[in-house]
Amino acid sequence: MGAEWSVPSTDKRPLEDVDNVAPSDQPTKKAKGGPAHPHPGDLEEVTLLSSSSRGTVAYTATYAAEDEQEKQRAVLVISRPSLNPETAGSTVIAEAGADNVEEIFRNDKYSKFDLDIPGKWRAEVICPASDRDVQKHSEQSFQFIRETPEIYNNVTKPFIDGIDAKAIEWVYNILDGKKEVESVIADHEDYLIVKDYKWNDEAKVTAMHVLGMPKEKGELKSIRDLRGKHLPLLKAIQEAGLAALQEQYGIQANAVRCYFHYLPTFYHLHIHFDHIAGGHSGHNVGKAVLLDDVIDALERDGDHFTKASLTFQAGAVKDKKILAALEEAGRA
Image (cartoon, rainbow, N blue to C red; front, side, top):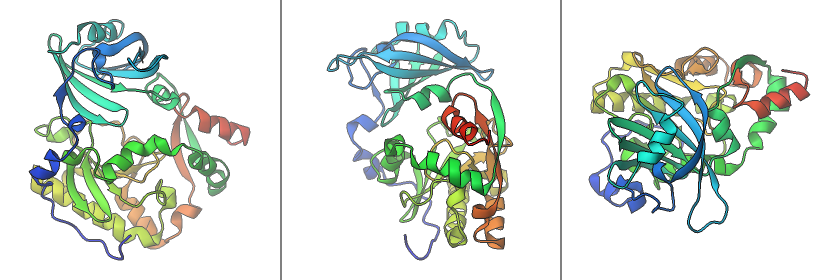
């Protein structure tokens, strides 16, 4: 990592960079049963996982690739106002075809589609789906955990270190310029500012969701790894993200919420930028830690996160393994 961090130009990457992306990265219409990576019409055997009041329903499903004998597990997430969770999954699979489905995003095992069947639907397919993918989208209860430095070192850190590196392959695809090149809004040798794939419509500024990510791999997995030496990096990412949002989308800095998640959804350090008027749930108490507060803590004590006790909310399903480890250690 370079010795100094600075704010790069916030202009988007030139068009020729987008044109050089592999064809699979570009939005394309997919014929039912055709591609190696499934679209919604390729799925079978849907089972309801969860539904939310925000019009999102999640299912497990299976996908039978032509060149594989065994079926793969998939997660299907559907978004549309006034969904019937009992029938939406089977409706999408039955009606999705070559002419009414458009792939708008793909990175590793994650892809998203716009569907016209009739009306506008949005579908996300995760395939092959891991246990964690299924758990993340399942109905569940939550509990608060007070994590002392001892608990972190003896329970949480070994759990994090044991996560398969393939779980964040999609992150490295972004950092290496292999995927989502068109979503990058600021590129520096030490970090990227990139649109989160959930921000589908740039015209809806209150739905804004952007991530700032260091490019160095392996060292920084969560806020627990931050030290005083990382202050210039954190400040540069914050400044670059706010500048890009102002210059490219007209979003004022005082309307942007900058925060980390702890525990994070994936273990490569990343800063969330979202609109203060947005309906995101990721800034809930027990989940979000404001970037300004992290910077202030590190300015006071560069080793703050080796000494601090942190509270996080753990899901009974999605965080099942870490809760089991905490219980085994007598800490749950």
